[in-house]
Each structure stands twice: as structure tokens, then as C-alpha cells.
Image 1 (cartoon, rainbow, N blue to C red):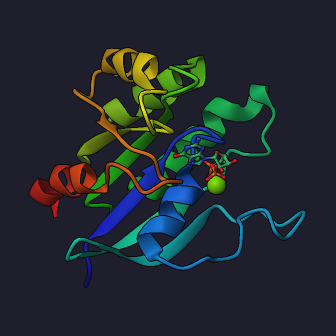
Image 2: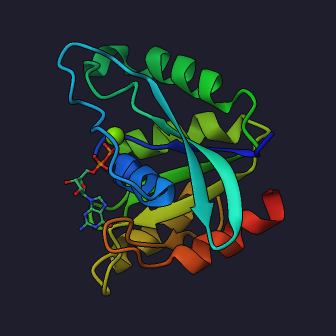
Length: 163
Ligand code: GDP
Ligand code: MG
């Protein structure tokens, strides 16, 4: 059985873009079926010789703010079950938001190793967010651009000790 890697993060940070890049083919978008909530999507990922199952999570997209914490806990707990490592994605351009901090609090209670990813960091556009991301307590973030395929070798190196 392949090791399992979960992508977690607030909406719009680029989780599905990263999933598609790692799976290597254009899959249907998460929201291509209106009204259908698909919390998780599984794919077979290949990254520089590493093979693993990748899980895209999308359970928090349509929730109103009031229901977020409980929903988030549910989603996170379900997703982390059986995961070998979690990729916690933030948007380096947007910087750290209260929702990022909320997710970080949940992830800190987990025994699953966390790799922090600062996405949308093509060029130097993500620098402020990369520095801010240190405050989440998961060490130095891996800067990458899922859309442009930058930082994938650094992602490989960050994953390697956990798989
Ligand atoms: P998700 O909600 O976390 O699954 O985010 P998506 O993968 O749907 O991406 C949200 C938006 O961010 C889309 O418009 C993407 O094109 C954009 N995006 C994703 N990755 C990058 C990136 O590396 N750089 C930039 N500039 N935009 C990105
Ligand atoms: Mg998505």
C-alpha cells in the first residue's frame, strides 16, 4: 500500500492545483458538480521518484463562518486518520489569516507530521507570507508555486523523511 499524504488548508490557497500537479493530469475540478459536496479526492501522486496516495480536501468551502470550527475539526480528524504526513498549505501572497491560525491549532493536536507549504510563491511575490508562516509553529515553510511547478524539489526533500 502506498503511503498517504493529505493536503489541508483554507479555501483558495491552491490545494487542488497542487493535487492536480502531483497527480499529473487534469482531473475534474472539485466544484464542477454544483450542490455536490465532495470532501475528499484521492489520486496517485508521483514526485521525483516518490510514489504516494495524495488526498485533496475540500470540505470547508461552502460553510458559513459560524459552523467552521466544528466542521473543520470533523474534516481534519477524518482526513488525518491513516495519513502518513499532512501538507498544510497557506497562501504566501495573502499572508496568514485567522482561519490559517485556526487550522494550525487543530493540526498541532495531531500526531501526524506536518509539512508547511507556502504556495503562490513564484518569483519573490510570496516573501512576506513566507516570513509570516514561521509564526504558525511548524518550522520553515517550503516555498512553492503549485501553478507554475516551482519548489517541487524542495517539497520532495521535505516529504522524504516521512515516507
Ligand atoms: P483550493 O481552494 O485550496 O483547492 O485552491 P485552488 O487549487 O482551487 O486554487 C485557488 C486559486 O489559486 C486558483 O485561481 C488557482 O489558479 C490559484 N493558484 C493555485 N496555485 C497557485 C500558485 O502557485 N500561484 C498563483 N499565483 N496562483 C495559484
Ligand atoms: Mg480545492
